[in-house]
Length: 241
Ligand code: F6R
Image 1 (cartoon, protein in one colour):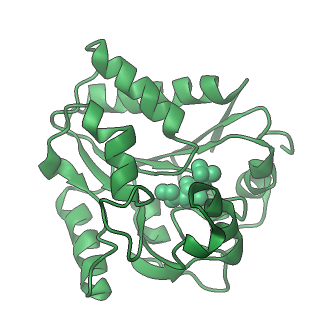
Image 2 (cartoon, rainbow, N blue to C red):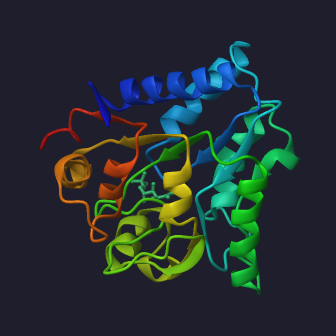
């Protein structure tokens, strides 16, 4: 694992965008695994700026998002479909057919999950997987537990995740209780992984990720088993390492 500590959120975002940009420049038809949440917003802004300056071209890139809430339509501003268009895709030249996001509205979850894993495989696998991290060490929506379901699957969100994500909703009650997420096996099959974290509330999870026991109780600790992980964090998130 390579850990890069940047001064603040802005510097973390810039460094992350440079890494994504270098991936896409070296391999224009890269398959990118993307995350939502607060953490990558600055990185998306930086990438949009690079695109506006003609420094990066997404016309051949393909993307697969990590997760989506169940029962939120793509038009719902809290859905991850909406988030990705609103914060990234609508500002760059990625063809719509190259964008993949799980369908949280599906009435056949099992099939949706199997097809998503097959689509990733058919695309040649993920070249660079961008991850955020939950304060409890979740990656994607792979929540801590005694066992992990390693393929794409439906999850019951952990109470602390519902609590943490309630800041995006009018009330905690509105946060969906279920989501679909790619599993740990799909994440670990990515050729390179970029994990981002910012802020004091991620410091404990980062410590466990970098130097804790590898355990399903801290899903991000499984990243220790991957040969190509870069962690870019700000000083606050690095406080305990
Ligand atoms: C989002 C995702 C989640 C978030 C994590 C951190 O697609 O997979 O694992 O990365 O919950 O969220 P923020 O960045 O909002 O703290």
